[in-house]
Amino acid sequence: MADATVKVRRTQVERRAHTRAALIEAAVACVNIVGPASVSTAQIAATAGVTRGAVQHHFGSAQELYLAVVNHAWEEIAAVYRTAPGLDVSLDRRITGWGTTMVQAYTHPAALAGYEILVHYRGNAGFMAEHTPMALAAEQRLDELWVAAFTDTGLSRAELVGIRHTARTFMLGAVARRLMIPETDADLRRELTDLLRAFLPARQ
Amino acid sequence: MADATVKVRRTQVERRAHTRAALIEAAVACVNIVGPASVSTAQIAATAGVTRGAVQHHFGSAQELYLAVVNHAWEEIAAVYRTAPGLDVSLDRRITGWGTTMVQAYTHPAALAGYEILVHYRGNAGFMAEHTPMALAAEQRLDELWVAAFTDTGLSRAELVGIRHTARTFMLGAVARRLMIPETDADLRRELTDLLRAFLPARQ
Image (cartoon, rainbow over all chains, first blue to last red; front, side, top):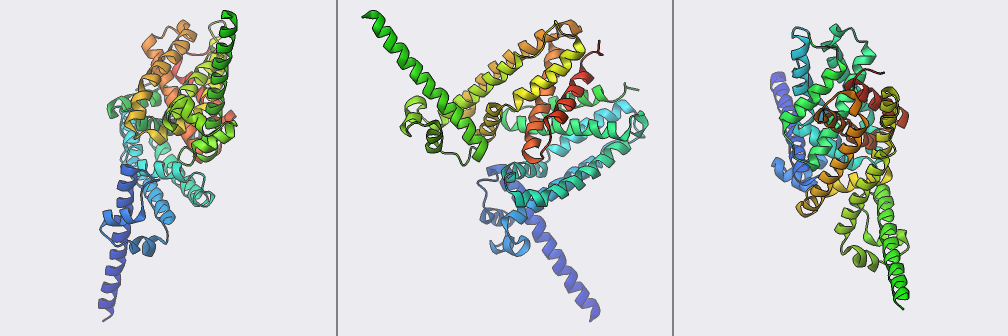
């Protein structure tokens, strides 16, 4: 009896999590196709294969759904960062690897949708007040992953964090530029790797 | 008689140019205040102190007005570039000067409005087809101004152009970032100057 109750509960929790994830994925796809200004919760629900009431039920409002999308974007960026090479790889190959990783992280569909949503909601003080602590915590996690990969360079933590912030701002510009001018991932990877190499100590 | 005709014509030309410039300045102000999605030609005309028909008369359509705003943005960016230090200044002070110049150029109100318009119209193939040759010509003028200021570094033209493109992409990211997170011009100038210094030969 107790076991059956636990089983039913877990299934409900799993089903809820599945519907939330499906709505977030659908929102990413819809925002990337039509933009955050034109997308509707009805379109997102239809793409996710759920009823229109599901957005209200699971998120309360479109704004909370979009905050969940941005939070998901930060998680995906961190997940890609975790695939970057560490101290066991030569500095030269590590820099090239991080160039690839950062391009993957910031051109991930979730990251692009998160960026579009942030640009769209930037004038909305309530949205930004909920986003800012989320962004600061996420950026700090990314700082830790980056600093841990370059502790052997002899640069201070502050210097390393500064280099990541410059590289991240460059990538943000590259994403904005890409919205206007088509370019290949290969060109972007090379440009970002050159930037990292200019700042980090000479190749080993 | 001939003189009088010339005088009247010039006055009409001047008046037309004045109205066009007033509409472009008003569009810059309105786009920066309410964004390109919410601004109307009626609001722009009212801000410029002209009738609603003036937009139609001088530009034909809202889209042509916005193209003129973007063109104006490119001209303002080039005008700021022309104030940057040249070969008569030490390399160290020249790099600092260019850091200041680029921050001024890309945070100019016309540049910010042009950026917002481009992001808004990026999915409009007709708009982008008119913009792309304008952008390529403008970027080439900016390349010439930059390369001429650093011919004494021993770097090739292609290397110098590559460094400017990286710096410009960083600035585009900084502008996008600034839409979301407040920061000071001083921090941004220092970060951009560090980037230029990392790429250009050691200080003199």
